[in-house]
Amino acid sequence: MLAAFDFRILASVDAALNALAFVLICAGLVAIKRGHVALHKQLMLGAVGVSALFLICYLTYHYNAEPVKFAGEGTIRTVYFVLLISHIVLAVVQVPLILRTVYLGLKDRREQHRKWAKVTTPIWLYVSITGVIVYGMLYHL
Image (cartoon, rainbow, N blue to C red; front, side, top):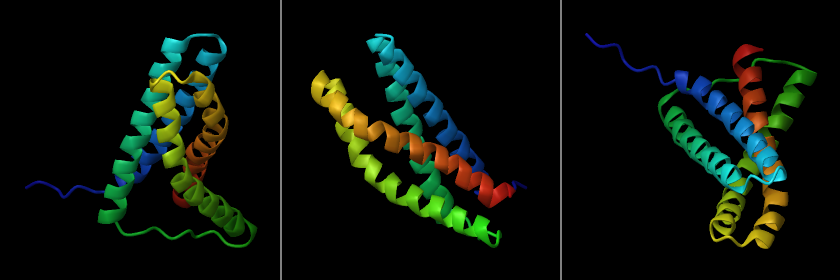
């Protein structure tokens, strides 16, 4: 008899995908600063792919698993919810920013791409790293 799939594992997968997106974005920044345009493109498209996979896993998890409640109390509870709320709001904001920034990059409209990337990148980095932090606080604190 086959055991039912435990969708709760996707929370850990999501944290790993967020961490990987963070690393790919940072590597993409280093690549472009060093003038490696092709490598930058590959890394950033990799980050987009990882982020898209994250979204699929996230929606699958939340559709199929019971929500986990944060158990911390006091100041750590406030910190958790500040991080969580800012993470969620910026996660929604980042999607059109990423899409526009990638579009401009793929169309080789570099000046516009750079301007959009200056806004998009810090938000994307923040959302990626706070996703890992929120996961750690929720499941391991």
